[in-house]
Image (cartoon, rainbow, N blue to C red; front, side):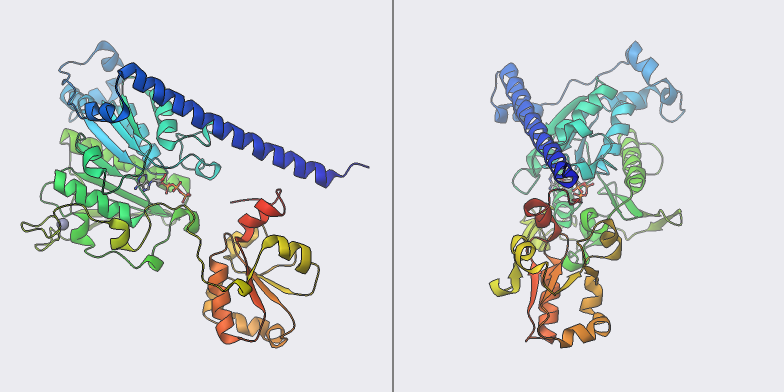
Length: 451
Ligand SMILES: Nc1ncnc2c1ncn2[C@@H]1O[C@H](COP(=O)(O)OP(=O)(O)OP(=O)(O)O)[C@@H](O)[C@H]1O
Ligand SMILES: [Zn+2]
C-alpha cells in the first residue's frame, strides 16, 4: 500500500533541500565572483571601495549605439542630447533592492544612467518575487544587490553597477553615499529613513523618497533646492507600534511598481534639471480608488535639527536607538512569557493535540484563510485586545479544566494575546505555541505552507 501522504511529505522536503542547496551554491558563486573581482583589480576590498570614490572621466559625446538605443527619449524637446549626456555621467545610489528599488533601478538603467550603486543587506526569497521584479526563482538565496545587478546588466550592459551587499548604517553611510549625485530611499524602515536623510543633508545630496504598503504609496524629494528634509516634516519618529511593514501588512506588487517607477522619474528630473521636481510636495497614491493626490508639505523648518542654519545634529547618530526600531526586518522574536506559559510545537503535537483543548489562532482573517491547523478557531488579536472575544468564548473560559493554546504566524502576537487573557483569567492554563506556524512547519509538518 502506498502511503501517499508520506510520499508527498518526502517530495516537499526534497524540494526544500534542493532550494537550500541552490541558495548555498548561489552564495558560494557570489563569493567566488567577489574574490575574482578583487584579484583582477589587484587590490583588497577596502582599497577597491576607495577607488570607487574616484570621479569617472565625464563623457562628452553620445556613441552611435547610444543614439540608436535612446532615440525615443533623445527626441523629446526637454531631454535631448544634453539630457542624455547628463544621465550618462550621473551616478545614483539606490538603498533597498526590494519592491521599490527593483523598478526604480530598471527604469534608471534602461534610460542610460551611467553609474548605479545598489545597497541591500538581504538575500532574495520566494515571497519577494511577486513585486521585486529583477530577481528570479533561480536567484533565491543570492544577495539582492548581486541578483539585481545580473538582471540590470542584461538590460543595459553599458551601466557601471556597484553592489554593496550590506546594511547601510551610521558607520558606513557617509563613505558609501559621498560619490553619488542622487540617493533613492527604497528601504522599508524608519531608522534607515532618518539615517539617509541626515547623511544626505550633510553631504548635500537630493533624496528621492518612496514608500508603499497594502494598496497605497507615497513619494517626495527631500533636500532639493529650498525644499524641506525628512526631519523638517517628521522631527520625531513614530511610536514603534504604529509602524507596519510589508511582511506584516502586505502589499500589492503593482503599487510598489508605480511608486518605484516614479522615483526613477524624479531622479532623472533632478539629474537633468527637467520639469518641476516633487520637492516641498507629497504625492499620495491610493491604489484602490486610483486617486493621486499631490499635497503641499511644509517648507524648511527653521529649527530643524539637521538642515537648519544652526543644526544640533552634525554627525550621524544611532538611528535604531533614536527610533526604538531595528533597521532590518529579520525576525525579532518577543520573549514576554514565563516558561510555564509556553508550549513547544512538538509537545503540543505529541501530547495535547488529540486531547480536549481550545486552540485559538490570533492571526487576521485573511491570513487564517491561507492555512490553518485542524480544529483551530480564528480569534484575531484585535478581538482579544478589545475583549470582544469574551462574548464568543464565555462558556469555554468558565471551564478552567479546558487548556487554551494560542498561536499565530511566528509566535509574537500569540504571546501578547496570552498576556492579555491571563490578566483576565489568572487561574486558567493559557499557553502560546512557541514560534507559531513557522515552528510547526519546521518541527512537525514540513508540508504545512510557509508565508
Ligand atoms: N539599512 C539598510 N541597508 C540595506 N538594505 C536595507 C536597509 N533597510 C532596508 N533595506 C532593504 O530594503 C528593501 C526594502 O524592500 P521591501 O520592503 O520590498 O523588501 P523586504 O524587506 O524583502 O520585504 P518583506 O517585508 O516582504 O520581507 C529590503 O530588501 C531590505 O533588505
Ligand atoms: Zn530639515
